[in-house]
Image 1 (tube, chains in turn yellow, blue):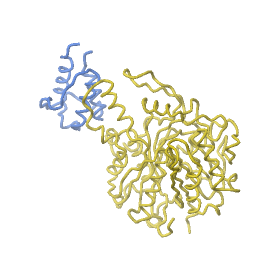
Image 2: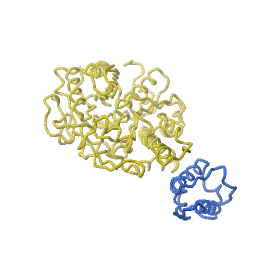
Image 3: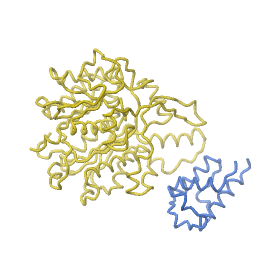
Length: 415
Length: 81
């Protein structure tokens, strides 16, 4: 990445099945505690029978902090995916001590989501197709649109710079972080609220996911023998990116530095990954960040727990790190917070950055035993003390869209 | 199923995101902080629960919450079961 405008991370926020803040989510992952449990989704009287499946749902009350600041109405008119995004952005900006910054209006907001307002759309469709009521609520479109989250963040904080949403399925929030960083590097903003969210645990959408045959009937066991799929999660995560000198001038606490980005497309298959695409994206981030000379790299794997992804990702890590592959600790926190689709990469970056700062990595849960095709230095059973200077976050999406982010620990940015 | 004032107050508090305790019959509507879109949401909820369609344009001019409750209860319960 260009050296003249370096990208610091100065604020983190997260809402997940593990807790209502970034620190809570990281601590729960380290305990370790799982946010995955069996839930029954009742689609109502006009639909087929209820479905019971493992899910990682956000506990009620996540809006409390943001509503204490802005009043009770702020989340009421938002779809769940936008309310989650707003809550994480609020925490991130508060963490960065930017809530009352007079220049906040010049900031950018770039968030990633795979789907948008599923809850709003399903409720509208239920009225129209199910109850046969012709009138649709006038707020349906502004609630459901993919950009509803970034608009809510911009309006709540008075942010008037570049604001847009990006979408690349499971890699959405990694692409969002990359775009936010690009805006800072091109001088379009000094501060960017980046990350993403997802809230698609709704009866019909989960039936659709079931039909993809990517969901586990039990739980998420990344890189383990006997793994049989992913577990859907929900939530949001925010990374406040800031031009390093800007952060230093205002005396901000720097939590890490974004030092490498890789993006690629498989151009191969809608649901099956290729090896070449992930290797290309990881190699770009690896080179830009100088990871060949890093003391140790904590790898926050995409690690969905599907048979194909994990095998492919393990091969990609070996291809990129070569002889050093087996020495890099690998975490896969979807085993605790589920797969947030568009919000996953940002949440894994937030948990990874806390792990890097504390040099303590959360374990992969539900591991049954080694898979000979996934031979890596997996962090298992309990949180592990690490000795790493860098973090690499992988995100590989349906449709073959890949984005990797490399961060340096805060102490690496002193010079 | 007949609608009760209590049920309507619950719906108004939920849809308009206002504290249930502040909803008094004598409260002037202007003081309750209920917006036009909230009214639409309340009417949608009534439609889903009781199958009674009330257009926003049909609402007469009303000064306080008591008048609104009386009007809505009368409209919902006027429909033959």
